[in-house]
Length: 353
Ligand code: PHE
Image (cartoon, rainbow, N blue to C red; front, side, top):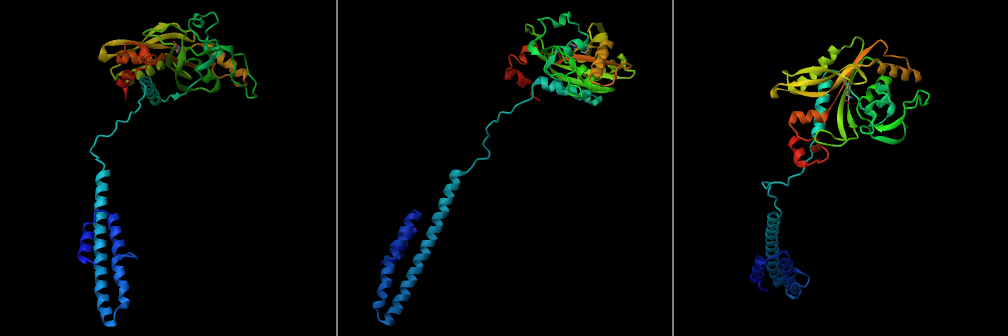
C-alpha cells in the first residue's frame, strides 16, 4: 500500500462523497490498510509488534488527513451555500399598496371632532326609514312637495320596524317605508327615546330620487345637529355654527344666517360661512328653532309608549347640511360625481391623509 499516494488522494478529494469513498478504500472492512492489518497474525511476535506500530501510525495519519479534508470541504460547502442564499438588504423592497380614508370620511371625522369638543354626542339612525319619522313627525304634511316621486325613494311594504312600547306592542302605524331623504328623522327618534337636555350630532347617508349632475347625487352624506334644553335660543345656534366655521376655516371665519323655510323649524334660517382665505361666502345648510309641532308629535308618541311628555316647556334648535357640498367648496372640486360614481383612485389619492 502506497501511503504517500493515499495521503495525496485524500488531500485532493473534491467532494465529501469522494472522501467517503477513499475512506472505504483504505480503512473500510475490505480496505487496503485493513487488509494489511489482517496479515499481522502471521508474523513472529517481534516483527508483529514493529509492523503493528507502523501500520497504526499510518492509520492515524490517514484518519487525520481524512478529518482535515472533510473539515475543509464542509467549510467550502457552507461558504458556497451562504454565497448563494445571501440577501441584499440594500435592494429596494416591493411597494405594498396601502389603502386610505375616503375624503368624505375624513371630512366627517373632522366635523365630528369639532362637535365632540363642544360636548356633543354622536348618534346614528337607520337609512331605511318610515314615512312617519321622515315626514309626518317633522311637520311635513302628506301634500308637501318634499314627498314627491321626484324626491323620495319609496320602498314596497309597510313599516316593519316600529318603536315598541315597553310591553312590546307597536304603538302606531308609521306608514310606508322609504330611504331617508335627510338625517332629520333622527331628531324625532332621539327625542322619543331620551330625556332632555342634550346635544347631539347625527352623521349619515341620505337619498334623493333625482337626476344626478355636477352638484346632485342620489346618495350623499349629511350632518344633523340637535340641541334641546331650557332657555335654548337662536344665539346658541349662532355660537355653535360660528365654532364650526372656526374649526374648519380658522379664527377669522364668520357666519351669516338668512331667513328661509323648513317645515320643522320656526324661525328657519340657511347659514353660510365666510372663508377669509378665499374671500367668499359658502352657503352650507339649513337650521332653525325646533318647530312646536315637532315637539308636540314627539310628546304624543311618547305618551302612546307610556312615557311622560318632556318637551312642552323647552326650546331647541337644529341644523343640517351636506358633507359633500362642504368638501366640494373647500377643495375646489368641480363635480360631486367624482366622489362615488367615478370613484377613480387617481382622484381619491389626492386626498390621502
Ligand atoms: N333636513 C334639512 C335638509 O335636508 C336640513 C335642516 C336640518 C334644516 C335641520 C333645518 C334644521 O335640507
